[in-house]
Length: 528
Image (cartoon, rainbow, N blue to C red; front, side):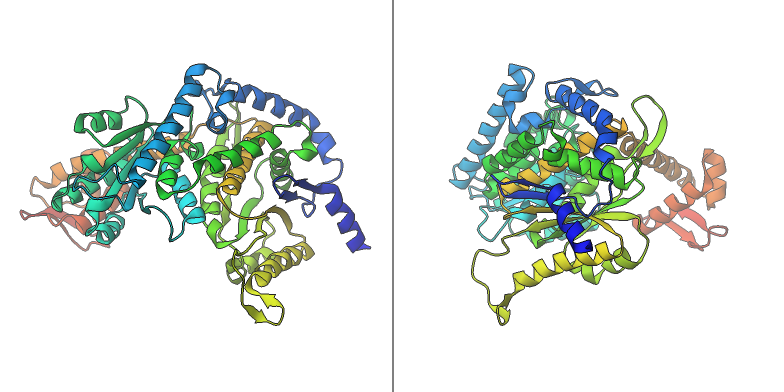
């Protein structure tokens, strides 16, 4: 009887876009049949607000900005001809630039063809290109790509070591919307210094993607960088992969950016309809709402059963958590919204945290992502009549069933294969689902005040570091408590800063370093 009920529920709540071979199965979520009817007022309002957003309404009231990532894959939706023209001209400029690099018409400062890309960015300015490179890349790529997406000196050195004998064949892409992001600026300055150290001209091999007139844009103009591409105010970092941020490195690697955009546009069209049972993005948003009782009580676990989608959970962490993790709603009420996202890939995680998912705290729901075609070539048999891809499929379905037997909820998304088109479709699906969910719970999905608060705190700490240096140069041995009294700041912050300075600056030394109450710090006259 239970099997018959499941079969009927599956048929009732299974959605397929047969034209593109996409399907969504929400039947293993625990919503009641009356749920859609109860949610109808919120759903209807969300559809109307989404329509207004797409035609150019101010969707980010904090910054008085439009939100136009949907226009990037369908410029006819843009609210004015200037934006439409900018989108189309930028796509053409990207394709022309990539083609000229591939043909060897654009060469390095040493007159060599480019073989490598070094992309310097962080967050949305790196995650999208990283996902595309991992999902679509192969040994046949036109250029090999490397990423610097932090301000970690050891991370810089690892990349420089790999590229030090290939700098004359390396194109550098620096991406920062504002041009003032410190991690990206530091990566750029470190790269410039490394090029100079190796005797290679940087500017003739450097390309920038940034806001027109930004600090970084002005630097690129002044130093006569190889090329400049725009990043518009109405595109947020976490939804920028279909702007020059993602399209430029993708085109240079040889991926079909037209197919990528077409996949996203197709999914947009499917998820623009107001018939909820046929709208995959609204169904996803509603499942998130029901599972977490409208306030994120359950985490979202992303399990793609395909190695090339390993970074998808990392990409969705930023898209979902930065968009939905908000203290206040649009009316200013304290709501503390958000959905925690984690995951890796199947079936790897069956040997990691699926044990807890099945038998531990029931504080999550799983989103399985199935790629039906496992391999283009024929496969050897692992045993009679069974190949490795059969196992992968079996583990997905088996894990789904094992979780269901313990009352654990899951969603299953299925695509026929992974290529540029379907990657674009997946990204667009989750972008709209995030937008719908934010509208259902009445929050602003398109600002990130918490991120800005962290940047300000970091800036304040760096200013404090200069003051600490100045005090220590006086020649006295000082404890963290004594320094904090002098500077009128919190002593623990001073102590941690001093420990950092001792580890990284040889002119600062200490006694009893790891004993906070006894540690004494002092300045010595010798080279860094």
